[in-house]
Length: 280
Image 1 (tube, rainbow, N blue to C red):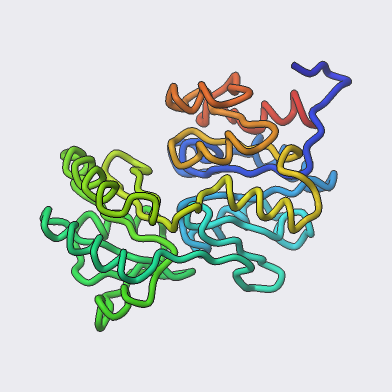
Image 2 (image 1 turned 90 degrees about the vertical axis):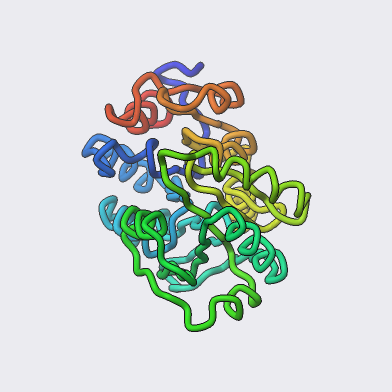
């Protein structure tokens, strides 16, 4: 551990949103805001890193008021499938699941009585709207739209497919996850970001891979990066970054792969307090 006068050498901080930087009201505390602004002012890149679309991350960037700075210009969206440069207003990295895999995944989902959805930078597209797809649209606070020809849209590929189910029956997507993993093998990444959200990502894609890519683009190794997270979709960045930090409220597996565990949880400014103690 570091002392007050010997801080960690960090050049980039990657931050999960839900249950990490955000409290249970989906808000960023004043203490977290203050700490992250100080980091950006000291020349440390602050990168929000979420499963959400770019448009769903933007309100939290505005809350931090760092987007105009060189050190607040990047966000990592869709669980690492997209790296977005807010100064250039474009994706500088975009990975997609191939269309044939999406079409088969949608078929498997419908066999289980579920519907899928895919993503652009600002819109969730679907073939048939369900209460669970609407739940995710509301949670992400982005636009939702019915595709004119959903299979045709799937055939073009997408950074991410999500299959949501009733939160009271998470076993449905757990069973579907096993079917998809058997069907696709290493051709796609299949996991649950929440017990009732099944996600399909491109092979070799994750938050950790995106952070590593961005560090390389910026000219320093991922060993100089710090990552904060709480869930399974944060595992790759916590494992790859030189300083992997699990929240106090993280699941036990994430804590086991992290280098540090925060003293305070997401409802008590765990991120900001950790940064004040070990970085600032």
